[in-house]
Length: 426
Image 1: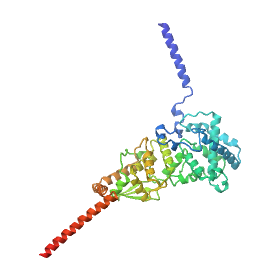
Image 2: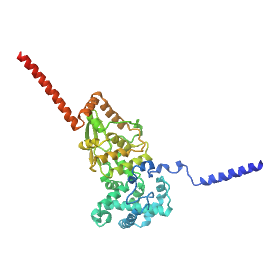
Image 3: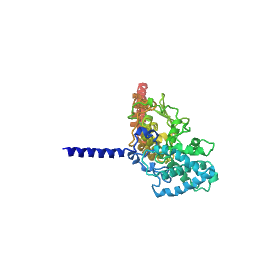
C-alpha cells in the first residue's frame, strides 16, 4: 500500500513537471498584447466561398503567404530592386532601417494572430524588404514619367493586380511599420496621405481617415466610414437584427422612388418620408468582390461590435435578388455596372454574406429597413404592388391588361351611346 502511494506521488510530480515546462513560455492572453492583433488568417468557412478573393496572385506581403508558391518569385526580385532604389532615393544607410525594424519586432509579431515559423533574422529581413518595396512603389506611382522603363509600370494589369494583392487581409504589414520607416527618410509628405492617393481609384470613400489605420484593409474600411455623415461607429446605437427587407423591384412596384446621391459617403443610405430611398453611387467592377470580401472578413475577425460595412452589404443583399433589381438600380444611376453582366452582380452580392455572422443593425439602418418595410406593407401601397405585379410585370400582361381596360371602356361607351340613342329616339 505504501509502495502504491509512493508511485502515485512520483507520477503526480512527473506530470506537474511536464505541465510546468509546457507553460514556461506561455503568457496569459491579457499579457500577450491581444489588443494589438489585427492581421488574421481568413476563417475556413468564409474562405471556401471564394478562396481566390483572399489569396495574393503576384506579390506576397508579410509572413502568411511568403514563398507560398513559385508565382511570387519574379516579384521577390523586384522587391530587392525597389529596396535598392529606396536606399538610393533616401541616401540613408540600410543600418538605420534595420535598427528601426529591430526596435519594432515585438510589436510587429503581436499584430499577427496566427503562429509564424520564421527565425528572427528571416522574419525581420522579410518585413524590411516588403515594407521598403511598398513605400518605394507608392512614391514611384506619383513619379510615373520618371519610371517608364520600370517593368511594373509598363503593363497596367500588373499594377491592378498589385493593388488588389495589397488590400488582402492575409497579405498585410502593420501600418505603423510603413509609417515609421517612411518618417526616417525625412520626406515632408504624410504617409497616410500618400496611401490615400495610391488607393484613390479603388477607395470606397472620398475622405482620408484622420488617424492611422491598422493596415491597408482597415484603411479602405476607415475611408468609407470617415466619408459617412452618419454616426455608424457608435456601439450604443446598435439595435436588433433585421430579418427581412423587400427587394428593390418590389419596393418600386409599391411606389417607392430611388434616387442616387452624389455628395454622400457610400454607406449613407437614407429614407425620406415622401417615399424616397437615396443611395450613394456604387461602382461595381471585377475587383469589387475582393475589396468587399476582405473588409467584411476583417470585421468578422476583429470588429464584431462594429460590423459597419457588413450591415451595408446585408442591406444590398436584401434589395438585390434578381437581374430586375440590378437593372432598376442601374437605370436610376445608383449602380454603375462595369462588369456589363447583371447576373454576375446578383451572384456577387448574394454570395458576399454567406457564412458570415450578421450583426445587430445600427439605429439608422434598423430604422431605414423598418421604414421601407412599413412603406411596402401599407395597405394602399401593398395592394398597388400586388396589382402591378399581377397585371403589369411583363410586356404580355401589360398588353393584355391594357386591351382588357380598353375593351371595358369601349363597352361602357357603347352602352352609354345605346342608352342615349334609345332616350333620344323615343
